[in-house]
Image (cartoon, rainbow, N blue to C red):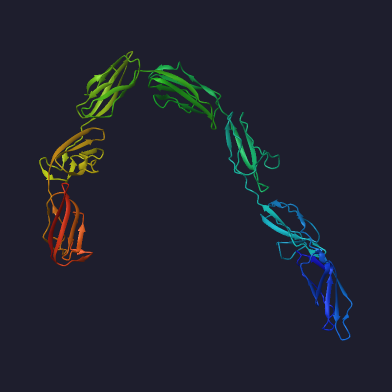
Length: 588
């Protein structure tokens, strides 16, 4: 008997001796390694190679004539080790559409499976269709001496899809002698070629040669999971760049208002583009077109040093900027500095910020203003104006008989209206009473400041403000308009103590809108700490600290009975704590 060793736990049953013996017989077993057993069968467990050998069985029958022992029956058991899994080799990674190559298994009597355990094996080696991408896993076992390996050797074959072409920028244009950049592409494991198919590859990206007009074609692929993509094409074009210079009709140093004529001279061709750059200020094109090689005639209207520029170009390739300096000798100039907005009768400085240093004379006209002081002929001058409105300042400057007049304009603003409304001079108000003070003229852009600020809490910066006047005092309003002009006015407010509170003796909360609420009446501004009403049993039916709120005859939403109710008021008048008591009759 042959037994395969599988993890050393395979049970083996040895058959019994023929059963035609007396049922009272005793069967005895012996085996290798001193192993013994009794019974018609012997099951061997945890079998390992030491179980290999001969097993014998005999039986003994007891009778009156004495015990009789049979001859021995023998059985041979051989434990065969389980073979290891076979060794698998071969190509495991493919790109889509590549020829599949069979997997090689080193071992005996190979069986192939699609699962690690179980299933039915086949002697046919696996085959993978490479037209579809994916990953496929197979398992193999070997059988020796009719014993199959316990473990199965796995092998995973992957078919990777062909990657997309790398992302490139094309075409790429350079001008002659421009500094080129190394070509780039977006992808993995890039390979660069000079041919669309075949040819030698390089992992180093090429750099185009821009020394002469030419065109080049490059190709690049990317490799992902060992699979190379198709090649992307990059076109590089090197374009011709023209050169040249500017010709001037005469010495480029002229007087203000005169003209110069300019022409192009160089290697430009029939399709060459021209771009003349004429100063945007103080120069005007008299004749010619800036898109031609010339001639162009330009008049310069202001003194200074200017430059005429020229670019020549071919298909976006421009020459260096050719520049021709021009010196314009002009008439004297100056720039008046003065505030745009000035308050009436306010003295402000009038001066020159810049002027031609060689000016001989300065003649000022302040447009109705009066100069109070000055330092030199060119200024600064202290000037004020007494009439609101627009005034024009002019200055005549002369330099070697070249004369010019410069101007500036100032706006003289009347002072803002600071008259106070809301209180009539001589009226007497209650101490700490609140008065609505208001500026006579309200402008959104003006600033208003009331004082003393203690009377106005946080409202002293409003054109209309309520002031709580605690004692005889002057209330002042200062107004500053959007131009910074300031004016002020004030009123003298007189005060007296007004601490009496008048309370109705009865009220009728019947909803007719007349005498429905019982509330306090006072001429002064009282600071109430408590206004409390109780019924005849001493129960509080109403309480508040707001003098504006009265009792509507209800408690918790329920109308109260007619009759008399007592009230008490605690308040502060002119910084004095005061308490007042009384009764009121509720009538329905």
